[in-house]
Image (cartoon, rainbow, N blue to C red; front, side, top):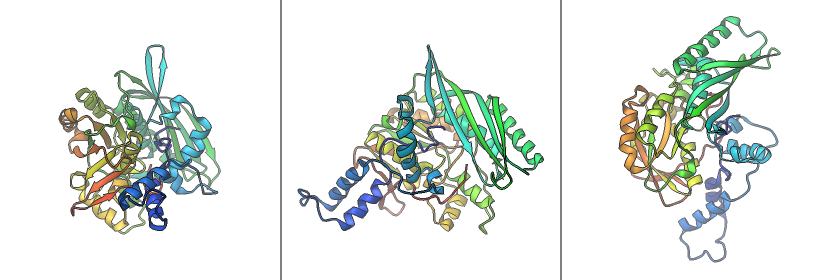
Length: 391
């Protein structure tokens, strides 16, 4: 299980903002807090809610537990991290860092259950390769080798399997990696929904970087490498459940060359993350909570295609929560923001990169969005699963 795709969690409880505001609506002031403003009282309740031990309340696993938001974070903290806790896992990065003598390796794994298997701009095979390459790249590593494990349903068309495998081979060649080991399992008809893929990847860390949400500092700049939400909305439209026509394709792409260019230009980069499940909003919440800072985002600077914005409005979702498969979020020191953006702009995958916000001191642990209309709202972590099975 790749640590990021277990939810990129940190050992604090998700959902605290929502619960704190609910408490503020119904609770009397705590002893000694009567002199505080309503805002200060809510922030104190946020701190108390956030400090509670995470737990899974549901008696059975739901789709929300795989969405990358609050339910996923609670599941990871209360079940997986509680059982497997060790210093390497504790940091929960996109890829674990392993040292063998003087050699530093990055190791990650991921599973893909996207539906449909084939969609505009890609398919499950290409997605599996690019997603694993990107998890390695977000740790600052150069990807080397991948594994491929297939779980196939009885009756799955052989022609479709050949198509998926050919797509994986082409994606691996384009990314400069090899698929060096694998496994195949077949389950009974009706038990596997066609094809699931698990991949693992190994890369080499050649730079002395340590990228983590807790490294963010007030004054740092938040960058995104391009328009957000393309992949998630493309998948929803490809399912044919909505009568919406849009000229939109998935943004799935390998990001290792883009991250290498960024790190060359901004060697003190604090954090790199690919905005998959839970979208940009989830990454920013992880940064705010881990670093005990505020993340201030300007809505007008967030790049979103008109097609994605329009479809999101019809679906009643915020593009900040919609998954990407070829976009990264970076937090860089202010003096390196310009070189970082320049480096991104010189690469085709970063041509539309933008600075969308900054790290501030206060209020710690919150992501705030300055809206187009001049207001400010809290961007909490994703609730529920508006876009299931998008990767």
